[in-house]
Length: 138
Image (spheres, one colour):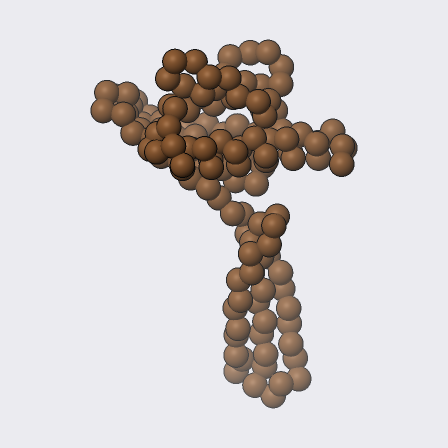
């Protein structure tokens, strides 16, 4: 018969879960650390164009686009994104490091400016961090 204690701890790089298991006689203590992905989500809705959902994970962005007559899902690795976005009239675009079309296109200030800016800043930071890790730059 064992007793389990779970404690979640937020750290700068992500979230770790400490799982401590103590046996009834107190002789055995096990400590396991699991890295949990901390995700950030941005949901943008438009009456005619549908919904765009962006979920930022440690090393990639999951995109789900739900239009009235179609649904599309894709995953973009952060290491290939240029961390400096480009804006046009109503969108902010993240291009790849190799010149091609935009890999991520977000509607400006949707759902609100505060959430939008926080998400964009997080994408910029993690894209730069992932590229530096890939290239071996500290």
